[in-house]
Length: 404
Ligand SMILES: *[C@@H]1O[C@H](CO)[C@@H](O)[C@H](O)[C@H]1NC(C)=O
Ligand SMILES: *[C@@H]1O[C@H](CO)[C@@H](O)[C@H](O)[C@H]1NC(C)=O
Ligand SMILES: *[C@@H]1O[C@H](CO)[C@@H](O)[C@H](O)[C@H]1NC(C)=O
Ligand SMILES: *[C@@H]1O[C@H](CO)[C@@H](O)[C@H](O)[C@H]1NC(C)=O
Ligand SMILES: *[C@@H]1O[C@H](CO)[C@@H](O)[C@H](O)[C@H]1NC(C)=O
Image: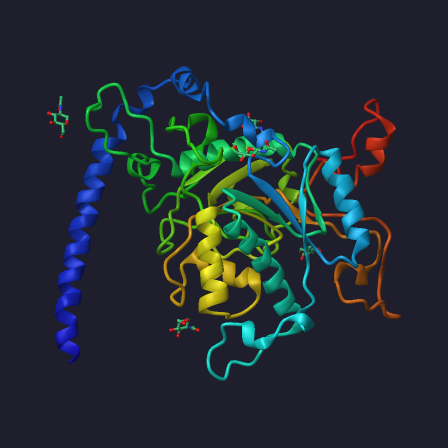
């Protein structure tokens, strides 16, 4: 029995190795394929009618922005609406769900699986209600936000670079002048960028040196993504040794990123601090993300998530189920294309006042701690922190939460 299994395994290994060698050969052959001959000027010729600028529209280049909010958390809705108008964003609202209103029989549980907690069910249902409306109304892409977030007042400039980086990761490259124009085989950055040697650290490609790509048609961030994980509490960067993940990264200096000594990477590993200079943003494929604070979903992504999490399996907290899909875990059918940035663009806003406010469950106990000043991690020119400054007019200096 066992030896019968070994023979095909051996063959498979030989085959895999041959494919690997062939791939290596192709990569090296293609590495100097005329991609570098295309100038930025050429790229901009293509960009003329590009939807790139849509990143700066009132829905950040998505068709809609949806904020999940329990109607009784009026405090959060008030503050989010102010933050949104100050940064010229127009969100719509989806009611949060109290887990007590979710029938256990609506969850796709395994036999004998015990029903999840009230908080877990409520969050699952609220996110799925948002995704269901995306599927039902054939929305091309949506950005889903929790209602206690903070972001930088430069968000639109930040997302501009993010969209260029995403395109570099997932769009086909522009054909070079010597390519056979009657039959263009799409090539991706991965196939032309020399893979790092095993003794090298994979820092990724600088954004300034990106290869020009074919402009996308459906979204300014590219045509083939499922999830853009813009707000998380932590995330790892896949390396050349991470199975099933592309290890391609795009890096650039973004002055809105706090210096390394001010960065919070508690749930991300320390790679951003150890391996990159101050004020570096790295865009890459998602790997072990934590917290679904803010994430964009394409129509294709919304259908797949709704199917997996409402029809197929309820395994744990919503953010962890989304992670299973991005990481392509075994119990899921296939893997989503999920891109992200480190540090994230959205972060939890910890409100001034009793710490109990951080949760939707109304308990403010005796030993509950009072927070003197609101704060968020990894956001410098915080829209929340600057809320008062907006009312004072433009002459006033913005507050930098994490100055160098
Ligand atoms: C913003 O751009 C996206 C992508 O092109 C588009 O779907 C959306 O309708 C635009 N939003 C507004 C308010 O124009
Ligand atoms: C380009 O590709 C087509 C289709 O494979 C082929 O028929 C043609 O001969 C090629 N032209 C050149 C110049 O290689
Ligand atoms: C955008 O990227 C360029 C490098 O291509 C960099 O010079 C610029 O500072 C970046 N801006 C932001 C806001 O990330
Ligand atoms: C992250 O870790 C540092 C050092 O252990 C700690 O001081 C800081 O409070 C942590 N940040 C968060 C948000 O937990
Ligand atoms: C997931 O759902 C499928 C189809 O309903 C089922 O066959 C499978 O056992 C489930 N797996 C887990 C881990 O729940």
